[in-house]
Length: 415
Image (tube, rainbow, N blue to C red; front, side, top):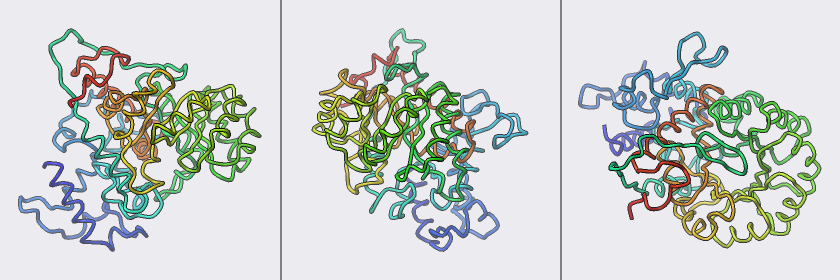
């Protein structure tokens, strides 16, 4: 089944049965197999077909079913993780569990494009009409790669370095705070951050720990302890609270060895002077997250930040913004090599990672898809998704003739 027809059916299904897709989440589609459904015309029941396709995640149904056991979509499950007692944890396992735990906040659609959840309030849907979320998806889909296969790049090196930290491939966890524990049936906060950071570290990259607006003392201590336990292999993200509050925690934040301090300016603005105050106070790098224009990026650089993150907060702050892939090239054309450039927005596969790097990013941040992995498989689920993404990225490098990350540029994009 082609994506267009699958997606149309998914849309129609959501519209036809609002009581079963209600925001109150009385019933999950995972339990709907006991009900009669309309025949799809080809001997398959439409809802069951959609259910299988959704549980399999991104990519075509046939491709997912045909994957051999040795591919990076499977890896051993650790004791105590979801799926323990079986020999391997699979993407199918993770997405099924994620849908069970996240529904109705997130339907865990096969293509996470912001359409099925458009109009939802709060949660992880796009704000308002949902167009900012959808624009992130469509902008990235419009980027097309040039396949080059006459070369001697037999194996590419996907590793890179960001702000002094070597990582297995150019993707890190997007900043996500305690609010991520309240979706669907929820997840304990300690389990949440352990899944994000532990899974990222297991995959050879950096996790993320975020605070919330009230900065409760016990929560902050517990969250910082996660970073310390993983020897600083995570970034620490601050919401737009007064600088005075952030600076009160400066000694404890720096003591964890955290990779960098991320400031969420897309959740609440910071003036250049306020950014400069933080840059001058902290010894660790400061990254301004939520940059969507070149003039904002230049102001951040003038304030002395070590990095900028091109992001519209997953489309969850302002309706009708461009997609991040639309605005990234103009920013990168002026600032590439002068400051670390991160980007996010609907990163689902290793090919998506390659696209963002070709547009000028140094590293991408992965949000919703690691959230689903954390809910569905804990640290093992997060590592599973990242390892698969790294394998896809490495394969895409070879097929575009790129031996190392430093060689990725716009020459691999079809214009």
